[in-house]
Image 1: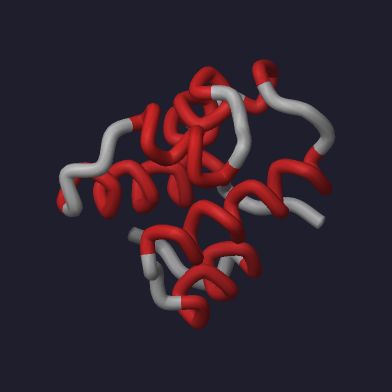
Image 2: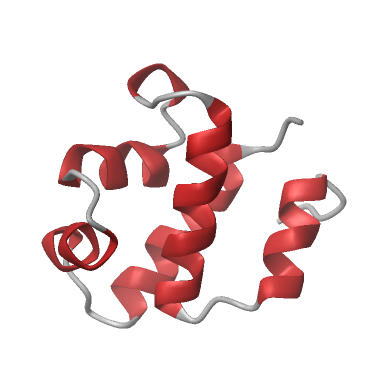
Length: 82
């Protein structure tokens, strides 16, 4: 299981900023440290736990922002390029 966290992180950050939601708000809503949210957005694997947890965080984050789940699945599958 491998996916482009940098591409997904960019999408999540753009969606968050478009909705004027702070990192702190996301952190509180997802019960995840702010540093983890920032690392997700930056695609910084080395600052994150195991990939299984990261995929769960990304799904939660996307759901929180209302990101299209079909788009997210395509990004996870690596079948979409931005």
